[in-house]
Length: 192
Image (cartoon, rainbow, N blue to C red):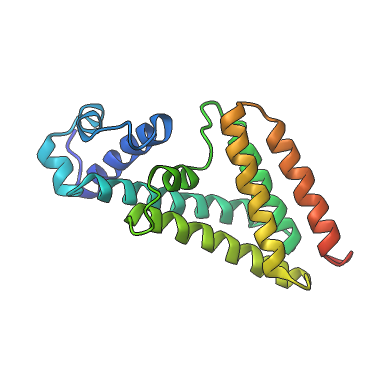
């Protein structure tokens, strides 16, 4: 079956993404991506000139997919608190998935600590967007200090993901939901 350039690009990203997520970015060489994707060297390098470019594209694409999933999960939410709760429920659902290895974005920041690396920058941009989204929801819900609460919710969210991956248990997900609810109860007016 012959693929279009866009289909080939997406196929390579899907294969590389599965490998990067399951094994770690640094542990996956371009030869493994080429062999697993079943594409020629020239095909991969025509789409992605370097591994750094491939890693960055993987992360950007994965985060775009995550935002799409969040929009779907929050579409029927009756208000801002329900949208925040939907975010935590979506994360909890991800954490219960077999093969869960934590947040791909956090994994990339760990593997690429150099702030100038394009994948690290894409990861930080995503986390900043999530915190901004949380702040917006909290502001709409009447939180007196939405930026502070958003920061705390992000710590709860990301901390639970790291622990769930490290411990291979669902307990951090359960605690994440409880802590987020407690914080929302403390920070939001009863009408929210």
